[in-house]
Length: 175
View 1 (cartoon, one colour):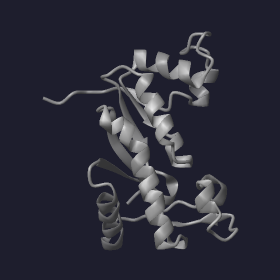
View 2 (tube, one colour; view 1 turned 45 degrees about the horizontal axis):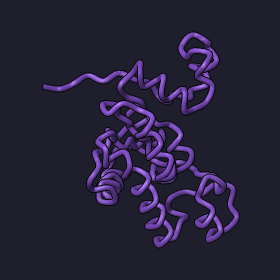
View 3 (cartoon, helix red, strand yellow; view 1 turned 180 degrees about the vertical axis):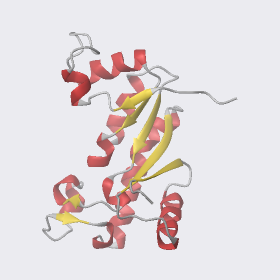
């Protein structure tokens, strides 16, 4: 029998915070908000991981601040979803290896650095997975990523990069 989980995208969503109707006034930090949020919902989509990769330490702290039954669906880092990625959103050691472009695409990154980035992302998921709090890794593709054989090959490559995790795929176009 399946289980229905309910949650939102991010416990730090600015509209959720600014509404003044959800969080108690005592929940002023991200930590306090996550603790309160997880007392109300049993699932969250981690949106921040799209903008920059979480560290293993951050993921570990999330596991400590939530109930055992809580689940995190983690959005894949934008570089892995074919979105333009600002150079400054990449980890510092990777940034230093690349040319000073404003935006990078997956195809712009040398293979050895993509390997490093995939490894970093995979390790960032490990604390959540280890304690059974990782739901899916969400790949939210851009509107120009139309379903086709090349795109299927890319999705299968993503699955090969993260073989132990469940992937969810979102196409953001009208096709």
